[in-house]
Length: 115
Image (cartoon, rainbow, N blue to C red):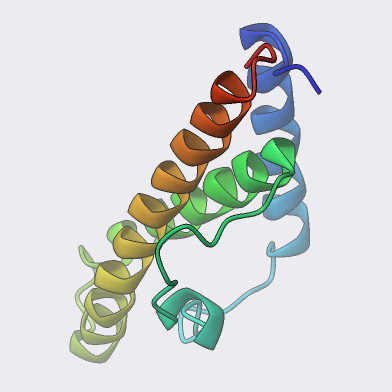
């Protein structure tokens, strides 16, 4: 399987962000983003093979984090506190996804295929 072009990845990201906004249009500020999956610490070398799926998850995680960071500027202390509590695990999850993407690409190159 070949990696998509930069243009295809950008289009995938744009479509993913649009879908996220359509699905979350009426969500209130108390919505809890951080799930058990995001909080889970993955063992080393545990990653998926579907690069597109991991990229989409990264785009969603970035979008969620940006919305939480917007809430930090709220005048409502409870909203700010919930947002701050969501940002750290989302950021860690984002870093894990980036490492997973790196591992997938490294595995493909090591196997002699194109990234």
